Image (cartoon, rainbow, N blue to C red; front, top):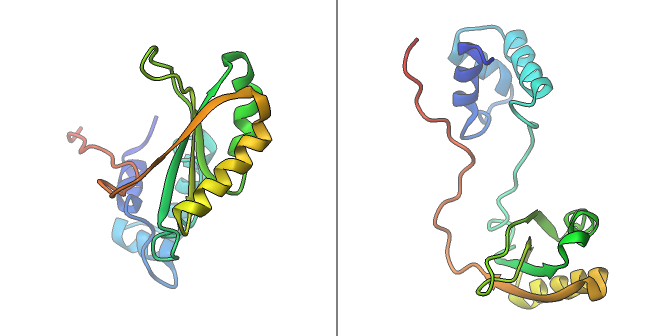
Length: 162
């Protein structure tokens, strides 16, 4: 069960840590608690699985990585548990997941997002994935992003006062 302090801490970090030489101290000042309490609550949230990790998320667009291709794969269902983690472990893949097929219109069940500086680079990386998978990949396509509609992490809904 999350404490009200936990909710306030999560809400205060939804848009990222403060840009400060001491972001945890800054959070503590904003929340009216100690730096040690902020660090302790964050450690507890990680331990319980309420948050997975605290890390840097680079802006790949600012770094020149502007081609984004969702590669979609038709892989035998019984092979997905073995092949999916191999795809997801590749440096070129930012996220990989399984989704249900919607036959007869959509045959693909594994999705892997690939980024590059050009569509040609993304296609080359997808070809490497195809070589890794081999004949288990019965078909695949690459769906390129045309524009960003939303670019934020999870936002908690406002909670009514207790």
